[in-house]
Length: 266
Length: 295
Image (cartoon, rainbow over all chains, first blue to last red; front, side):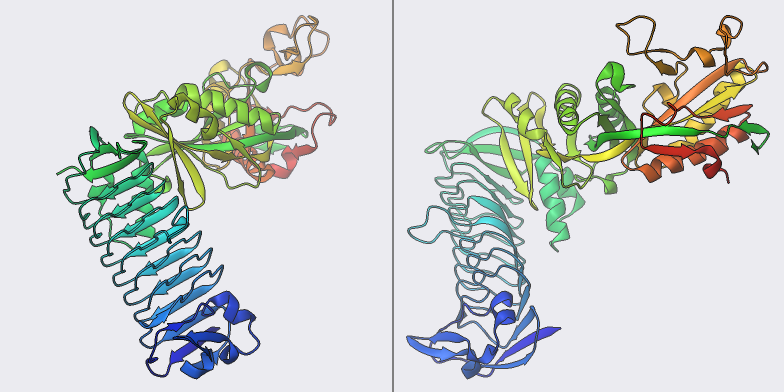
């Protein structure tokens, strides 16, 4: 059974709607009465959305590019956004699946702790990133982006997997603590700056920062598991990438030098 | 009872609980996976003398393994959960970690788990790193060749050990031929191993010995050479050799199925008699009657 919420018209001011999660919607007696913020005014879900159906398989229809915090903190169920979505989508989510069929705004999956976030389009900046004042960004779960991602993707990541089919913007994995970032389409400049541990993998040539040191060219056994997992999550990963060799660069030398950038051998 | 000309004894195999796990070993080539698997399951015929029983279950194609490379699955059994953990740490550490291109993964989903990779990681001397993927932690241990990848926790289940059939033959050649056919048929069953060389033991044992230090000794009533030397023998006058196949499994049903296939194969291949070993029902809770396995 699917619960469908259809946006009637674009809100005049950005809408903050962290109630739009499968668990909170399924638990609500009256979905239309759930609170949202319209700019700095209190409003209700029913003021903006037409509600039909029921269940923890939720579908949001319409252009939600001005609707923020969709799926934030969700713990279970499946939430599909049939188009673009605004800021902070899936931020802090702990479980369940969030599927965005269009683009996602900045801070998608920021501080995420579990579950799966799939963006069929592109994502903005700070994908899976760290909020100011927090010790770490993403701490678990999986983020898959079929398009590109903006700057500082995976900043402060402690655990989890971020995979982007396209290119990552500048400073991917900024100050990351651990975890894995895979950029099938290549990295922007300053990737891994300040990283302590963790892996950044790219399939396009890149010159790491001067604070990274070349180790060797080899076939990382763990990468086969990750690339097969990405296939299962719907990304196009060729067999050649599984068998390929990768340059291993260790860094950041300004920190622990326990992290690595793996670059597909040219 | 007769089956394909063989006399089937109306008796039962007495099996008992033992803890087991499944290890998936992958490598760059099938040959290296097999090499690592053979090494890991070496000297593991009997828990009495080897602290565990282990053998290769089957070879695996790339699409059956976690990393997509060719591999083997091996089963290992010990008397308790902790024993399985200790033996896995020893054997994976000495035989898989050391084997060129090999990686090692858990092969059984179970509530009970033992720490294997989490112990072996210390070989990395601080340079080890972990990865968590889909809820499972893996350890990357740097080695001279590159990296050894091993899963942290391995599932353990309460399995069944001591399933067996005993094949008698009118001469040594026909008895061995029947045993080989039985072992081959049993290998088609998933979830079981036959831990003795080639699956076959020529030296079945009885509990105890006249020498107090020995927990087990030769099964004299089934030794053809002692027929004229002991008061009671179970070797018929027209039998010259006896072989036993011991079966350990992750559950009772695969052990029964392996015994069934082995029984039929041995009878077809020329065994004169087929029987089974038991301890009068006093040792194990699982009694597998040969008559129930008859087709």
